[in-house]
Structures are given as structure tokens and as C-alpha cells.
Image 1 (cartoon, rainbow, N blue to C red):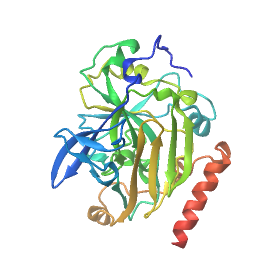
Image 2: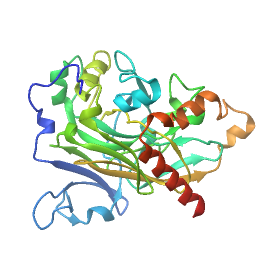
Image 3: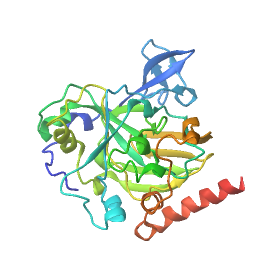
Image 4: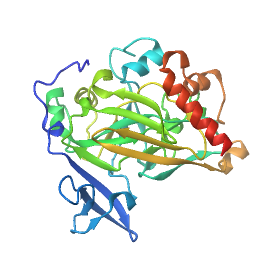
Length: 318
């Protein structure tokens, strides 16, 4: 694992005890609560007003309210190997942004417009900023982190050629960031495994510690050289290999051991009305779009490819 600036001791945000905060919608009102970790009520959600609820029966809101969402392009060795054929994509990380309107809660619908062909999953972990952060060193950056969330950085790759620089429509469309179900601290992130599932089958898998190129402390220190991060801001830390397109009806989930599992169901919607009038660049099916949407199967583990093929075949037969 190459952190560039290794930590000398385990930072507080990575040390126990584990704490998970969730944001739920009950009777039209939003409430915060904490997952009970021990005892006879372990796994239940205790609201801040004292009520005890069954955690998996709730309607979840995103547990963040960011002023900005910043994403690292590539920060996993397997993804760099797949897309660049080398273990590190560039000397330093590069970034894009997603608007806060892309946020989606756990269990929500992920919208795929009828004029788009390629909606790719990317299982990731998100870093949530806990304090105003500007001009910090990597060592100091750990104390600026509130916690971590599982996330799905979904992408409409049909706009990859025209939005290559900004990624605005590729990654910024409504519903394309399921995140949660909670914010977790007190777990050593680098001992955890990330898995993405399509209809219950594993399609991405990586040990975070083994594959990390740049840790979140390095990324925060890099961004905060010039951009002030404020509480609630989100940084998405990239995905391992085998990001591929899925179809309406598929359930996609990202699970990170120790953190939790976030998911959403892909739902077909009509094409935007303005598109039929010739407004804007239409979704494309160009060589560049296919290069990213379909990836390089020769460079990913066979079981991930096989599982995705099984999920797609089952969906076609449903």
C-alpha cells in the first residue's frame, strides 16, 4: 500500500469503538439515529429522541448534506491496471465533481433515461469531512474526517466523449450517487474489503488496504491546498476494476466490510423532452464511450465477469 505519506499511528477516526449514524424519513419528517452496537438491541436504530427502530425497515435519506462532492478518477491498483495497463494511473491524483443533486439514499431508485445505453456501477467508499479544512498536511487531514460511507458512483457513460473533462452529465445526473446507509467511524478502513453486487452476485472485489494508491489523508491535503472543505463535504475515493453497464431492474449494491451495504434499483425513465428537439449533445455510442463502458475484460478476474454475465442472463429471462 502506497500512502505517499504513511501514518505513524492509527488515526482516531480509524480506531474503535465503532459508531454509525443514519438519517431516516419517518412520517414525512427526517430524524437522525445511531446503530446499537452491543447488547440485546444490537443492530437496531436508536433515534436521537430515544425511539428504537428496526434498522432494515426504514426509508433512508443520504447521511450527508455537502456543499460539494469531489471524486478521485482512479485510486485503486486494479482499476489502473485495467484502464491504463500500469499499477498507478498518474504521478498525482486527478479529480472531477458531482453536484449535490446527484445524491440518493440507500434503497432508492437509480434512473436510467431511455436514450442512454450505458449506466455503469462503481462501488466506492466516501469520505465525509467533519470540520473546515484548508491548507493542512496529510497527517493533519485525518482529524478533519467525520467518517466513511459506502457509495455507488454511477455513471451515464453515453456522455463520456463529450463530457470527458468535466464528467458533468456522466456522473452528475440525478440519483447517480446512492450513499449510506450511515456514516461510520471507528473502523480501520484499510483492513476492509469492498464488494459490488448486481442482483446479489459479486462483480467488483478489492481489499482496500492492498489496492489503495492514495489514502484519503493525501487526497484531502491535496484538494485543501486550494479549495476549502467544509463539514458535510464528500470525497469519493475511486473504484476497483470491472465497472460495467447494467440495465433497468437490476439491484446494484456496494458493501464494505465494517461499514455497511448501500444499494439501489435501476429504473427506466423516458428520455428528456428537450433531447427530442435537438437540444444539446445527444448520448453517444462511440469508440470512446465503449472503451470506458465495456472496459477491458482480459484484465479483470474471471469470476467477476462470469457473475455479471449470470446476472444479465437472469434479468433477460425474468
